[in-house]
Length: 220
Image 1 (cartoon, rainbow, N blue to C red):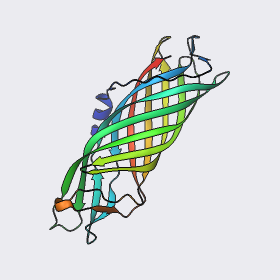
Image 2 (image 1 turned 30 degrees about the vertical axis):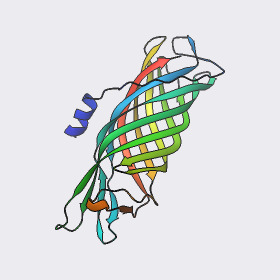
Image 3 (image 1 turned 180 degrees about the vertical axis):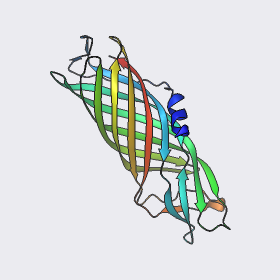
């Protein structure tokens, strides 16, 4: 619990930007017509360890260390009916961490490698405007990219999110969001974490991450 409170307290957003064109408009809580939100993302991700087999005969646990993430999301306004809002979300985010193999056999040592995890996603955001605040749910689909050593692999992924956007002015707002990200890794092999080029074959069906974060909203 103390760790979670500390993570929430030190949450910070890291910068990124993008540009896109959208035909249509919607009004913000302050009444100004705007077409999209650029959200500069930041937060902290927790990863659930995955059972694996190293070199076929050495079972253990593959764990991505908990780490901060950063990125950018573009939420384009599509639907506005009274207080209901719908947005198309395009998102990229990245975390730099370590992937560690921990053998179930005590005599076998643990081995770690630096890794990077990127999510490339597209999906929808639906919310209800309540004054300057908009509570929302989000669902996105796309791909996860894992880079570890010489391995650069892509797998299908989904992210489910809950959060709230608060529009503090005509141009600026804040977002707080929690996510559950799932990467389907049934055939995600060849993650090199051992010595001498040893590979890892993942025996489970996926890797799950839970995160808490948010970002700075810039209205277009």
